[in-house]
Length: 148
Image 1 (cartoon, rainbow, N blue to C red):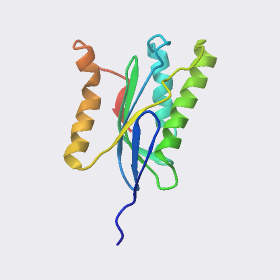
Image 2: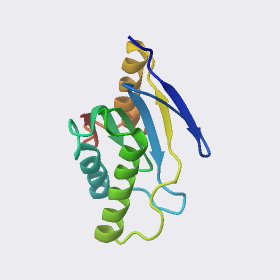
Image 3: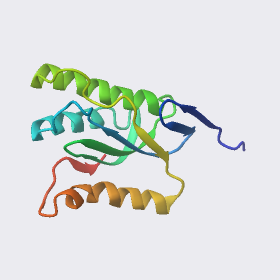
């Protein structure tokens, strides 16, 4: 049995890739954009859920007013770069077309991290699901967070 191949590339941030890995991914709205309204967050959730079990498996996600977190495992034939590009591109097109947003919707770069073990996976799941309460302690039921 051969060891998984680890590769990397760099844009502004370093990105490490290893086959059969799960990733913690974060991307943010462009600085020129106003915060996501509730109906716009729903569009982002739809993008994340669109190809679950076809191109990737999602453990958990949250769409906040200015950023998104997803814990995702790409399916063999799909790269994480292509998956994140699809999410951001679909979202940008819909937000521009349906909500009149202009210009870049998301920052070009995004953060990702290979999740190394089960303990880290559980920590990231708790972090993602706890994000709304951390930002808004009074929140009871945040509909833009959930399991894939």
